Length: 189
Image (cartoon, rainbow, N blue to C red; front, side):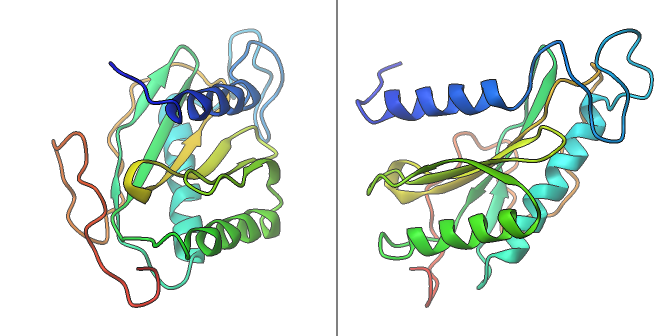
């Protein structure tokens, strides 16, 4: 796979955020038990995926006017899960910072800690973390498409079902990669 010069810094930032999201062997979870020992009382991957979905739903509802979105791929790693959403609304270069500002304001109001803000003109992003150790982000990538991600901290291994939330546009089930943004908005586009 060929990488562009812009993809390498983005990959480094993503690796940094994943490292900060808590996928390790120590620590505790809010409302749960310690991550050491038998793991009783600890959240499993399915519960973490559902919590991630709720966080993504909440930030998308907070961004006004509405944006059309579709589910991105779910991935699991040794001790966590990542849920993704792809924004299908065209967000113009002039509106990208507005989108990021609204997501950041929502996260601050929800007591998330802002970990990093990338002010790059082409690939801006904002990264936050919850008290429970979930990492969340909004980033702009190729062709100005916005992506939202939620990464769980270390949780108990379990099977992970697909998301249950219905996208507010085409689902693109089985389509990968997802199409580029193709929905026009009087405000965002």
